[in-house]
Image 1 (tube, rainbow, N blue to C red):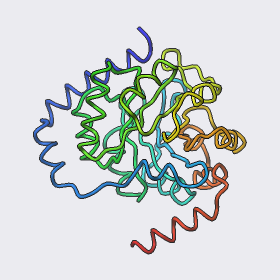
Image 2 (cartoon, rainbow, N blue to C red):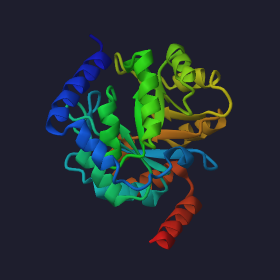
Image 3 (tube, one colour):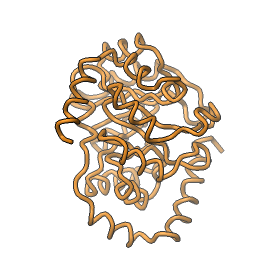
Image 4 (cartoon, helix red, strand yellow):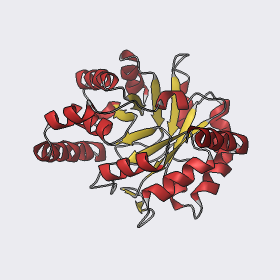
Length: 273
């Protein structure tokens, strides 16, 4: 069994447990009381390379990353540093996340938020909406073709954007079949957890014009991000290096190299407040 298959199996078990604790009918009722979302997709297409800053407690490859990290403190620092959007890991067993982390991020930041998890059931889409997500991750390799399409369709009905993640040419073909607007190219092989930064460069040439491309995994230097922008990537998702930084705000600003955008964002937030 590959690591991905193991994580998907755990996700299915977890969904079954939570569905017993909180019925889908209750989540549907709560979704009906929500008012609006923050446009995740739009945040990724501003001029320059947009940064999706991730809150992640641990990972199978890195172990504990930032023990005792406070969600509000970290995501607020990301926002001050100029991040365009947030990603929050909610998988519990391997990544130490929770829906509580998602809710705390929503309360602490005005940025749009991606729920990053192994989404395998429509139930999780309703969870995401209820707990404050604006987008969800759909991993092509983890989903059969019909389920991938139905999850993407139901997410749209819930006003959730989708980051459709691919790892190879076959995944990309399947993402294009469902007409995914935002395609995440993950440099990490989810079967053996190795990272190859050439994955993004190899796959982006087959992405049609008009799609938003997000590169994921393995980045921690501004020079790497400059190269991504050069080859046409719209956004980059970074977690581990930011979570390990002594000063996450400065770490984000160093990667974005865009003090002006940071000032404009904070000024807009002050006006809205």
